[in-house]
Image 1 (cartoon, rainbow, N blue to C red):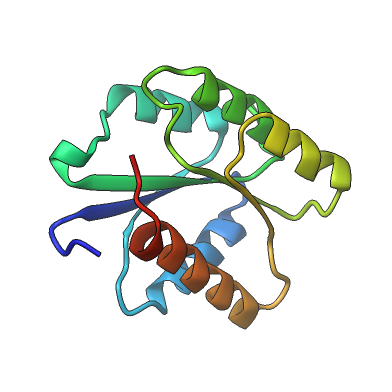
Image 2 (image 1 turned 90 degrees about the horizontal axis):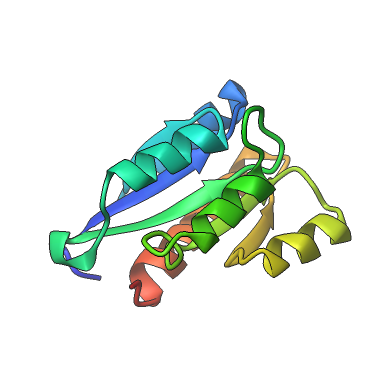
Amino acid sequence: MNENNRYIVYLADDDADDQYLVRSAFNKLEKQPELLFFNNGLELVEHLEANKLNKENNMQAIVLLDLNMPTLNGKDTLQRIKSSQTLKNLPVVIYSTSESNYDVQEAYQLGANAFITKPERFMDMVTVIKRLYEFWFETVELV
């Protein structure tokens, strides 16, 4: 892990309670990324397109994306990100209450890098968030 890097997690989820729980789970970590929250996929995509992310700026990021949102749902948001020349390498993790095999398969077909079903218990969420952080920001090399 490069201590000079800025780590950012973008969360698109229209549920204020879920946003609060994710923030609280990240607050339990020793090292915390910057968290940016969006209420729908359109807000997220517009922000990402307006703000360039790259390693030269020491910025590394992932997206946590809920499937069920107004305006631009998670699947349509995922398609827009993965079809964009400037955003397509940004890791997108679907973070949804869905346990549907159809949703999982479709998300991967659309280019999702991972699919996580939201845990029901907060301490399980903390564990998932910790593993997510460790994997994406401490283990793998991001583009």
